[in-house]
Image 1 (cartoon, one colour):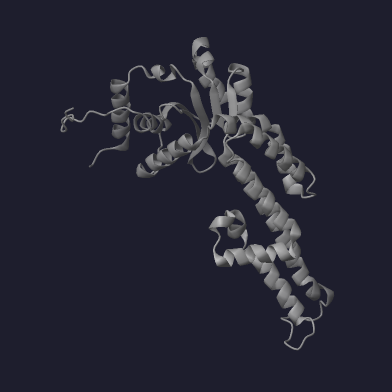
Image 2 (cartoon, helix red, strand yellow):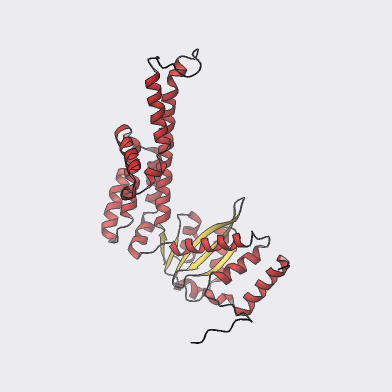
Length: 319
């Protein structure tokens, strides 16, 4: 349309100020809020976004992430506005917990189940890579024992079949990430065969897969007492598993145990804010990126809210 992007940015800024001159009203009557950061540019460039769960709108956004940025938001709130907040959802970031304890100590801190499952998936994938490296080294062992023999082993070589089987085993483990990550009821026949092969040949990886799946299932429990009992059993299992990645996961979940149980008891999640993050990424993609961070924040406030932009060539719909 032969319009400079700087002109568009000024138009967006004026439109937002005309429609909503007092943006601070978004901070009134906050009860359930979600906090998350999303990347807007390569190189670890983030913005922190806070969403009102009850209205599904962005109430505050700022460049950067961490305790310093969230502290700016909390200090903008009056004591009355802070006291009205009852639930804060987010990932397991330490800076979120520290700000909640400092500014809203009476509210319920919830860790989103999506992030807990993500932790378990990362631990499972770490175990899979470790098992694959062991299997791959086993396949290379004959060549290391006989360094003088170069090239592939001959068909009549006694160790050829063993080497081929070891390599096939390593390849199966390498390509099993998707099958191990899926829920058992959604596995295809080939994926079921891969999981069965792992169960037969590698008990450590299969135990890690079972611990991941058990954790996913207990997060779906709606009864808080039952979930607490199941989580206690899972923590004992992970703590005695002799698997390094899951012992580290045990420590992490143990630290957030109360926050996870709050999530189950209250039925809260960060699904709304994850959907908002997708909208923000779409805004950035449609604009081919933003050079001016304020223009991007203004667009976020316009799109991720219930504001109606009046257009001169469109008549308002009659009731």
